[in-house]
Image 1 (tube, rainbow, N blue to C red):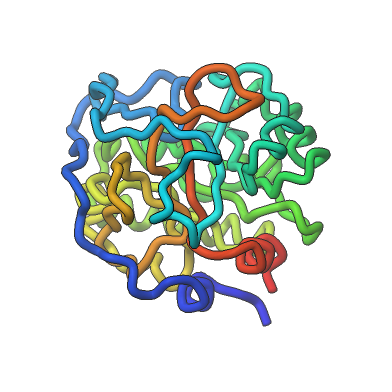
Image 2: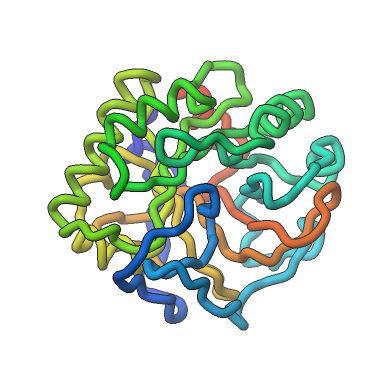
Length: 280
């Protein structure tokens, strides 16, 4: 049976706390991020400024992570900002999954995507592609089609996660209802082209502000929540009952990657991660 967002969450941890563990930066209005500068956890406000590093961020390796996260699986998300990556070392360090930047808007493809996506596959790291949304530049359908045909596709091969839509950086001049429509447009097109529910990456502050705390995606998309904190559970956007992935720091370290990298958790064991990858 196909495993949808609701079924996945029930199979994971349905009692995850839904109250924020700590305050988050709140999106503001203003200019968009320059094309190509968007990456997961960029920490951009809508006027193009980056917010200051959060003193609650972690700087951990897979071997030293808190026992409070023992029931989850460690992962990372990367783009060309991480430079050359030794995926065999990443795998040996205990990383079980990765999301890799593929596209942005309808004219940008990450220059390191092809190499990262292939080398992660060869190292047997379960990986998926992500698209950095630019709702002010074109429709959700147009961007979903570009993403699906430039790295965001899916195959049942034990190593490919469904694509992810990265939503951050302000509300792009859209009302909550207009943003809801844009997201649903992206979702419907992506699913029509791949057969998969797109994963939604966002923070509680962005989602609550830019969609009005919309519940319309909770039965459709697994949630990838961004909340940099030392707490044992993250803030969850309104409208979602639980998290599937959690980006808990942008200053982690992993063998095989020079410099800081975003660190993530999957809310379940290896069998559930494989089920999500294979849509079973």
